[in-house]
Image (tube, rainbow, N blue to C red; front, side, top):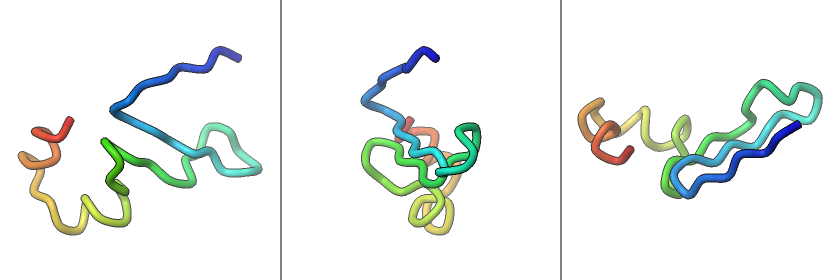
Length: 48
C-alpha cells in the first residue's frame, strides 16, 4: 500500500479498519474535536 505524506492533513487509522479515521488533524488542529465545533466553514476553508 502506498503511503502519502503531507504537512496539511494527518489522519490516524482505527486499529481494526484502515479506511476509518480515528483522528484527523489539519495543520495540527483536531478537526473533529476542535474545529467543527468552533470554526465557521469559511475559517476552515481558509485554514486549508
